Image 1: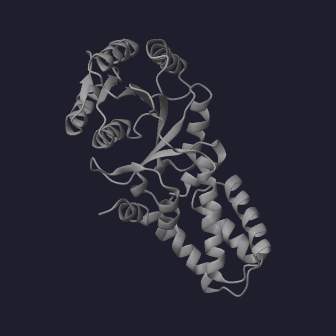
Image 2 (image 1 turned 180 degrees about the vertical axis):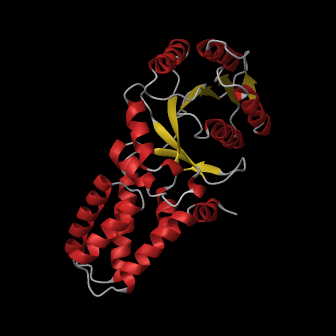
Length: 301
């Protein structure tokens, strides 16, 4: 199954709720008027796109309809696809791993799927011909290292670890040393799940980042925040909170196949000007792909 098919299948719950409501609106289609636009705005809000983003999309849609003199159902649908795609295309979702080595620091709250995402990312990068090292810097959660080790073995990547309770920054330091010695291409650093309002955990994240900046000053660095799509609007708030502490460069969206509210992706990107770099649509190690706006919009509408 290709990624587009996986995405379509993964978005099936969202697509069903979104599509069904859309079809209901168009089944009574008479003409392109304010009533139609109001109904489309309501569907967007109910699909967890968010009020601010939904209002912006419909406002732009209204202008596009006038400018292009759109009068038919398919024309409105295509204009809506174009408006959503423009939100994604306004930010650069290219993974910037230009140096050797490059670093990916992975952050997020508890339970969003950081460990599995790291395993899937590592697997994908290895398949792209890169040698990947993983740093097990979540030293607080019981079994976190063991879980990551399982995924590292699956992805056929080296893991640098220390015993539970070790200073996470020292694990990252050792991992950087090993990455240099082994001539690896990419170092992926796991971190403990943290709530944005726990200051000592956010301070610890800054300490890890300082170690990376000091030891690899010239390296390309991505700070990716993992988000659980099933949390809906709460995901948007999480991004805003983390952005205040860490310079997040992109998002990894997980559990998209488990929610009827995949529209939240649109709101997150729009409200935070933040690109989605990877998207996960399944449990298997190869169920993660670089985000593609064309595929996403086609799968959604």
